[in-house]
Length: 548
Image (cartoon, rainbow, N blue to C red; front, side):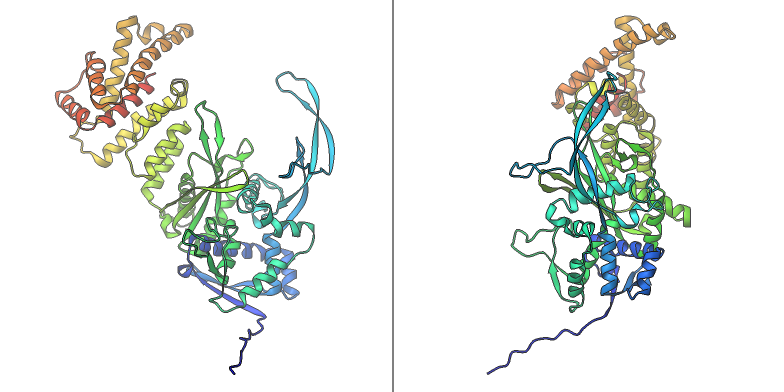
């Protein structure tokens, strides 16, 4: 009879975990290694950590270079490390209404309070009842340090609040996943550290389940019913990637022109050189602006999720230029992965996943768009065109045909941006794609439309700007009448979606007034009108919006 033998696992007191960036399977793992490095280097400067080390805790980097890092660790050191990243406090929060469970049962508050509030419109004071509930607040380790968040008092700040809100809403959006924080807020807890230690001392090939709590986008199993698994020593890194990722909030402008926020854009750097990145990102964090926009840091608000990748690469480029004179972000990161996610009800939805690789020309163009344009609507479309390598005017026909006309005529920011595009975008395109001998189609269309509005206005009202200049009332009437001319033409063009309908209108109406144009320009414009009709229609809509 064969004997059954059990494989004995040797007792391990100290672990040496060696990580090479090139061997890690994803950007989240590589960012996790960077987050681990950032935390340990910060802990080394803390007195409490020094005392723990004296008392036997081992948690130190024995190697750190651009290719990777080696961590020396014992169980006590691991427990302290987890106590640091999952540290939390039990605080109080005001609620305007009583909280309820799914069963509609009321959750009893700690207490009720009455507050006096003054209405800013009527200046009247009224008494309002609020309910005080206990709430667990994650600490955020070094991210709450005033050295990294200038708005922080060591505990609360703009940037650390953004990070905490994301963690509580997305990574720990399901209440059952918050136990590591909640247990530590109530007292001592090390069950998770003991469990991870037992996994780490197994053979290197030992695998564990990979939940979405640690790896964004993971599922229990995929469509083919294959389980999501990861090696324990690799999954260990996923506890730390959120300390190296950057959090952004995409804004959305609705049809009424009101601003709303759509979840979080989590930008995860795919690190190429570890040591260099950790040095750069530490300074990047410390240099973040503390200017507010509502309850958020202004610099975290983006027009679309992928802009978060452009913003990080811009800041890394600035940091590289200041410190070494280099301007290539690719020397630090291979790219930026962006996960756009939002909590909808009780579910965490991934709205989109994208990646952007560093391109210096794209980063330079992003800086120009960011600094030059004022309208979120205009800027968003320009950014989409930038990352898609499309012409600057692409997509504006769809935008202008779907938003209410008032958002164009009453939006001075949008009109300003179109005029800026006339003065700058086309010249940039000329330098990149056209020779000096070729006519600039964009300029021809804009001049033609501008001349049409001007002459049509004069033929109807026999007024020029010089007649009304200096008289505010007459200037206002002048602009209103001019807007009517442009609006009528704009709506006519917008309604003509068929190719020949637009061409006939362009020729019979916009070209019905005298146009001072060279014969070769007429030929080029006519050719473009028939061969590239959508382009001419888009430019015409933009030109009319600028002249409204």
